[in-house]
Image (cartoon, rainbow, N blue to C red; front, side, top):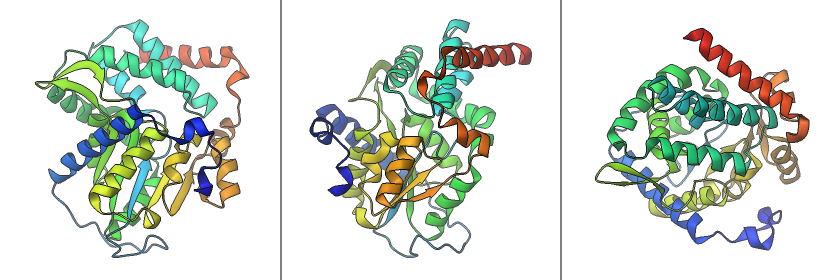
Amino acid sequence: MAALGWLTPRRRSATARSVLAGEAAAQAARTSSQEQEETAPPEQEAEFPVRGDDRAAAFFDLDNTVMQGAALFHFGRGLYKRKFFHTRDLVRFAWQQAWFRLAGVEDPEHMQNARDSALSIVKGHRVADLKAIGEEIYDEYMAERIWPGTRALAQAHLDAGQKVWLVTAAPVEIAQVIARRLGLTGALGTVAESVDGVYTGRLVGEPLHGPAKAEAVRALAAAEGLDLSRCAAYSDSANDIPMLSLVGHPYAINPDAALRRHAREMDWRLRDYRTGRKAAMVGIPAAAGVGAVAGGTAAAIALHRRRR
């Protein structure tokens, strides 16, 4: 496919772990969506999508596309409040969030650190308990950070009678809470292994990131009987170019610099719901200074202490 020409031969083929992660996410998403009652949203005029096309669906990245910031960071804040971990762990979460906001990209090393932190925290806890806590954390930290513009795009697909899925590296349990609260069909997310309803501290495959997201969308589309050429995908990150390239209607939402360039080259549609100042921050390179990141970390910790 011409749209995948940016990939090197090594990255063009998904790893076995990516496929495993994608298939696990698709299975979890379908199981969850089948348990939810379907509701008919109010009608709304929209240029796209085409109404009544039941072989089309929409796939939305979560972090900085649907919601400001990283879902995993907000989840971490909520767990800290409930004494799941200590102040040193909060510093690590704050550092990761500051990097994410300043660099405007999903750095694989930082995502790996965030994943390892989350897995160590939830190991030994019951899946049902984390789901219940996720409901509370959504109300406390996430609800007010949903981008209205992106939410309207998702609603347009729902109004057209199409299914809408979140696709995120965040834990699938949290992604499902967010999807349900927004009235979406379901969510594809990172699947953590559990035995008898208790987390083992291991993943099924790998985090749902980059090529794994594309594998999850491909697997879900096959299971749902979708025509990907009639589907839409939305993301802010160049890491999601594999997923965006799968569909006939790719959108760059609040794009990072690399995705913005690629979207313009491919004539993809762009939407930016950030203020001018926030949008400009995307252009700050990762090497813009450890001091800036450390300052953001210190500010986050200070704010937390004042609120206590």
